[in-house]
Length: 145
Image: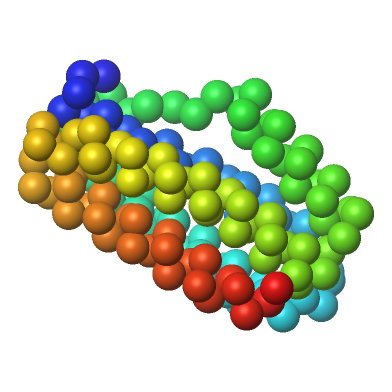
């Protein structure tokens, strides 16, 4: 990847990992009676939307899609399984999601600052929307704490 695609790569990889982990979380919560499931599904839908949008931009530029490591995904799955087994309360689920999204916000802000003068307007606009979505997601999750 070159510098012109680093910001787009971040959006793609972060939304792919978030989609994967939230799908795993929803599977773990499937037979449980959590009120947070509806919001979690909405977050998944939004992350998948960013995944598809970033994928479309990659494809329009004839660039190869980056891939998250299977080790990272397996590690995330094990962490989710353990956390849900230990405490599947809405507060615990919200805390877990807020921690993950907060890391994403920090990384997105850094990437925007690092590459805002290099990337095309389409990518920068998508990154700003992605950051805003992440920030709003945390606000929505706080009601479950």
